[in-house]
Image 1 (spheres, rainbow, N blue to C red):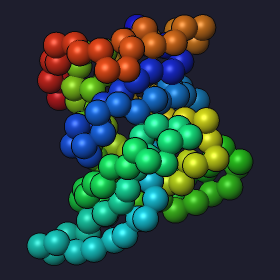
Image 2: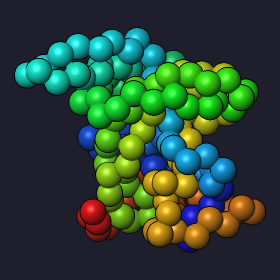
Image 3: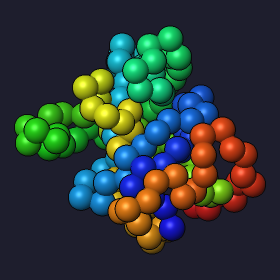
Image 4: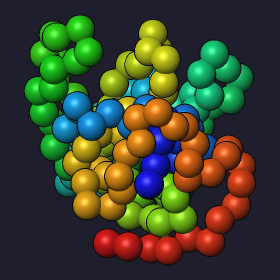
Length: 148
């Protein structure tokens, strides 16, 4: 079981901890990024970007790169449709590690730097809407079990 908000890690991107809102109403997961650049490496499209993993903290900055696996139209929280790049990265939550799809967008005005959608948690967790941080506090080490 996980709560409506949880600390998660994105080790492929160098993000040790980011607070995520678990949103079963959203199909896809989204990560706040800025300075997003597209480039080509060995014939594939890649994204280079920066992440501020902590809300209201612009000093903590992580630079990351990932292959682009898709580009999709996604309806944002305001109801507008926007085109977003999609990457795949491992997530660590509740002692498990598995790959999820992440759309890259600007969530600077949002309360959470990451939105964890139902596709990422389906079949893995039950979500308790009245509890937070069931899977653990920020920085608390847990044994990690890789599940694909």
